[in-house]
Image (cartoon, rainbow, N blue to C red):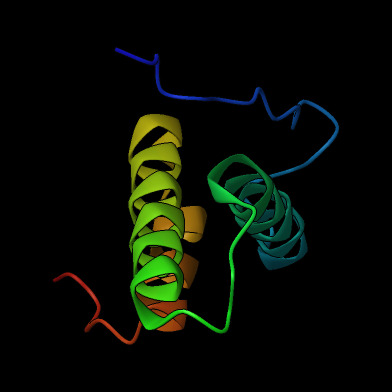
Length: 85
């Protein structure tokens, strides 16, 4: 069985208490997720759905692991989920 692919994302250069830092990290996470989950054949619906689900799961997990309020709030906003609390 193939091991899940992963990628380490550096963010020690960012201030995650500031919205700009959270936005930069979120872009890094989304880009890494697309890379790790790809490539995708956009002409095949099943392939695209699998890719989309993989990216969503990868971003969800990265945000959960980092566990910072500004990043979590941004993720919920980007994913169209209501804010917590």
